[in-house]
Amino acid sequence: MAGNTFGKLFRVSTFGESHGTALGGVIDGCPAGIELNFKEIQYELNRRKPGQSSIVTQRNEPDEINFLSGIIDNKTTGTPIGFIIYNKNHKSDDYNHIREVYRPSHSDFTYEKKYGIRDYRGGGRSSARETICRVVAGAIAKQLIKDITITSYVSSVGDIYINKPYQKLDLSRESIEKNPIRCPDSDIAEKMISKIRKIKNQGDTIGGIITCIIKNIPIGIGEPVFEKLHAELGKAMLSINAVKGFEYGSGFHGTELTGSQHNDLFQKDGSTKTNLSGGIQGGISNGMDIYFRIAFKPVATIMKKQKTIDKYGNFILMKGKGRHDPCVLPRAIPIVESMTALVLVDYLMYNKLSKYSSIIN
Image (cartoon, rainbow, N blue to C red; front, side, top):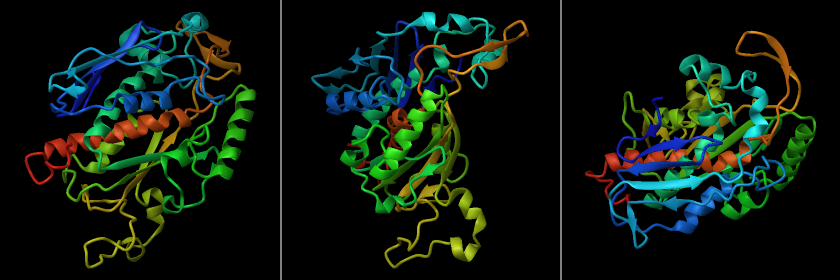
């Protein structure tokens, strides 16, 4: 299986399965002498871990990280950073009923057809548990670019939306983390939580949208042809489990406007009066806020009977078992931020020999 490494200069390679012994990875290219805040790394893992509220999977994992190399006296040495997180609460028997059965809209079918074998226990490598390694690497990447802030929040669940621009919301950590759905609008958050609980009680799942904002990014990040900044951000987001769409700036709504309505007019200092470009023009950051939205589908495994096929082509009725998220959104917040940080740190390191060298702490 290829495709287990992300990044070019700041690279993370990951391993492990949902119901295997452990998950882990190697971070290569991290500069030496960076003093790491381990509490912040664990904090990010805690935001992603299962069992943190009644509206997520009830799998009970501590998700405690063990660093194996590349760090001494709390500082990076410049050598590869190895890390591992042991699985403590996997219940593989919950998946015996799909050993030879393909769940609708899941990767069961494609994995087996591609590789001739699959790990049916929790989905193996296709499980969102794989994202724990991304969060470790992203938490370290965040500490390399402390002057740049990356903030994400749940902006919709099903047909329930925040109808305010992000500029009118309190996007402090305290505001976003004060409710289990991680929505900064308290009234909307309650409606979202109620919706998820209702869907969960029906044995079903639901999707929604996460909005991400990048502030204080310098002008000039991104390459103008095949490595546009928004293209790399889009690739990073679309690599996350359950993501079905990515749009930045005006996105699809921009297609409804004329050029005169859509153009961001310059001010004397080079900033723009509006920011429908989403902070990126020609694939390069222009110094304005970068903002984008990521669409997440409903989780494929549901607790309702559905018609499907087994590996022999027979039609059968199956019903999901085990512990699954009725909605992935609240746990996806740190994943979105981590992948964003990995993209940014890679670009900034690429420019390290030029005027951006001071950005890398």
